Amino acid sequence: MHILGISGSLRQGSLNTAALRACASLLPEGVTLSLADLSEVPPYNEDIRTQGLPSSVQQLREQIKAADAILIATPEYNYSFPGVLKNAIDWASRPPDQPFDGKPIALMGATPGGLGTSRAQYHLRQVFIYLNGHVLNRPEVMISAAPTKFDNDGKLTDESTAENLRKLLAVLCDAARQRNP
Image 1 (cartoon, rainbow, N blue to C red):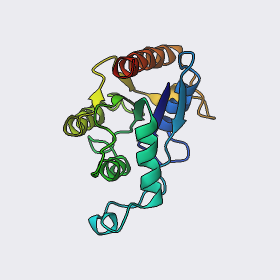
Image 2: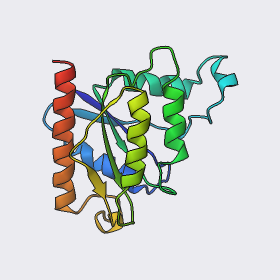
Image 3: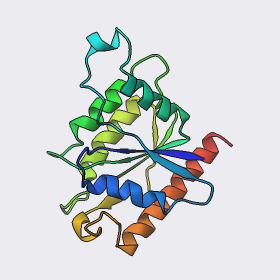
Image 4: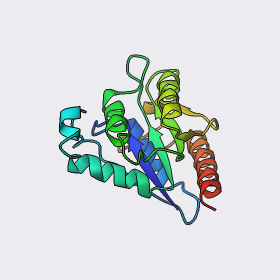
């Protein structure tokens, strides 16, 4: 089984990317995780799309299609998720063959703040309702005070957060198995 991780942050020292990397070491046996690179995805432009998908977008779409499940880690900016993530979703979801359709999706987020990206995750859920992505209802993983839970190298040091991530990964893998027995 393969999970595609998508970080909503392009920042070098992103806590959300660090959380996805932590997940790679917490996976159930027989499960792999790779990270999508959104840094080369251009701003969405219908004029460009009608001329053919940029290679970075085509690669992202292929990664989503090939994955058994999607794991998104998002920061929260101005009560919502970042434009870079919305841009990637907009590009990837263009017809034909919208790759999120029916795909199990887990959301999580890390932030220095106290609400742990709850509003950003709520907005992402709304987007995936339209795209027919099957977003897990629980467990919810909202990593608040995130800088205290990772060391300076981005390694997860908080065991309760690690346990929450293990639970999320187990439920996501179960959802993927139910979709593809």
